[in-house]
Image (cartoon, rainbow, N blue to C red):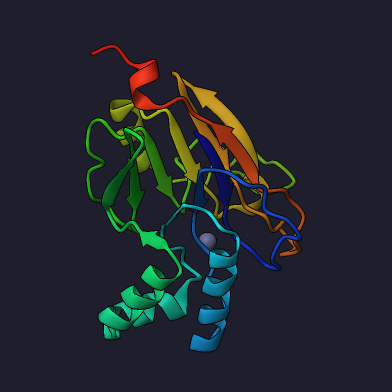
Length: 203
Ligand SMILES: [Zn+2]
């Protein structure tokens, strides 16, 4: 299964490569009005992915507000663009369990999650600013949970300078921020191929 990972858009990328699942790891819908949100969703739909999964970032303000005040409308807009919003919830695609952490949530990530999407990275992994400093800015609680749940992949953004990937204890951590520290479109969407759950696990 090919996953295409993006977050933290300043400008839209020229191309988004094809894949099976598009993961939107937050700060995608950063405009300041409903028209901008609709335009972003139309763009996502035009990319033609069969599955698109999103979590909220701290700059997805219009969508966050709409979800609080006009939940039905917000969910209708997302559904019509084929976007599944994960807010401390999960969805299963081809046997893989995708869990989305809501912004600033401290909810427990369920055991058996294969892919965890969290706008804020886990502390210690792909969570530094550029130029790199010794300071790790990610979420300590998330890091503790990842150690226990041991998902195959953690997808994040938020700290633009952390763009890249790293691995620890069999978990791959990807920061897929398309914008750099100067908020310019600088990075390519990340691609991750995962085998389906049944092919890679013993029951
Ligand atoms: Zn952010």
